[in-house]
Length: 91
Figure 1 (cartoon, rainbow, N blue to C red):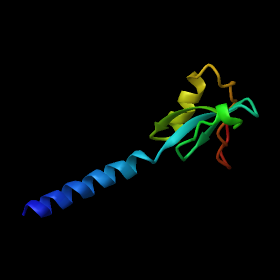
Figure 2: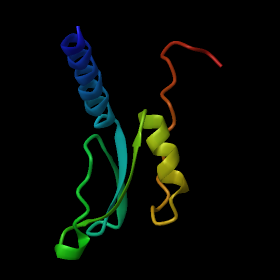
Figure 3: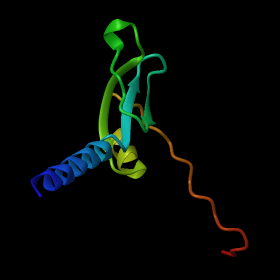
Figure 4: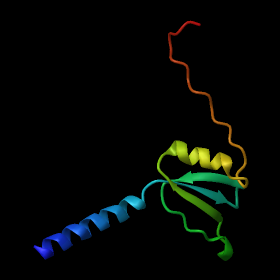
């Protein structure tokens, strides 16, 4: 019985660790002077000649990452295109 409980606890721990790796990150790109949103945990490598200067996250949704990007002072403002109007609607 103890081994079954221990195995169950290990499965739960592994599942929460895998879940912690998913999400969205805001990454500063030194080469382009822009901030990108990525879906994998970034490797910060600016000290060894890389382009990634910082990373912030993880965020649960793309909208959360976009909101965070808009509040980071190192990120230039990004203009989002307006949502498309449905066809056939009269104003």
